[in-house]
Length: 323
Image (tube, rainbow, N blue to C red; front, side, top):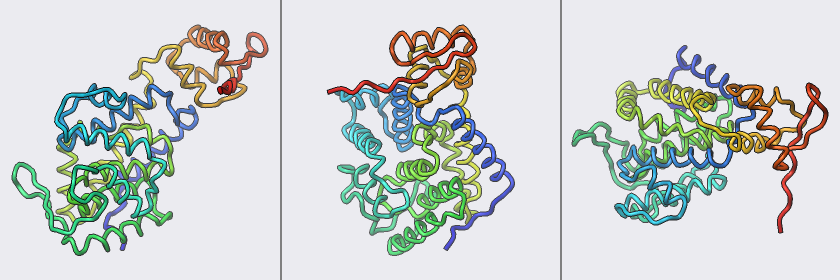
């Protein structure tokens, strides 16, 4: 059965805005940020998603664990981060459209944290806020069939992928198929669904925006429970994704030096480009800055230069094989 929701005009407007952002990102060849920005965004994703669930480690502590440095803190919190790091290091092993893959990801994410990670729950469960029951999940005997139906819906390509990702996230929270870890799994799986169609979402830490609006996140889940459909959650999550992509596009929010800009541009694999093409990616730098960047790139043997003045073309040099 298709999960209940309606396609309202606000949802269509948000899809349009997101599509425009994705088009601009593709045109600017920003789908794979340079290494240090990928690392920063990965840290933000892990820190925020676990922070929503009450993890007390700071962003600096998460960074230290990613760098394999020792950290002092609650054992459970450290294990949560280490498990999340392991999951993010194996994203390519998960098929977002497979129930078995979902169970495998849960097993990795919750290893050592629950009694039987990677298995659906066998008991009833409720969600509480300040000792108040805000959601009574469906009976455990229904979980397997409900998850099969949910994956059946997810695997229908005629439904818009952006909407499917939001609906899956909400429905997983509603079904609450696991004894623990449902929130972090919902956010992780939405990212994987989005990544299957739009690779840039692997590096968009939308979880940090959810954490900033955490109360609204929970309130929207409750609102949808009462309404019996996921409209409000779809609108909320599409708004989050739209903001996250807009932040990615806004280079004014970043401090990129010449080395970082070159690293980013080299990672795009562009060939036969001009200074103007370079400036189309880094829209806030001057012509003089772009010229200095490109000279640095040629001096450091990252770029090849052909021609003079207005007819100058650049090529990215292939990496020199090692070993």
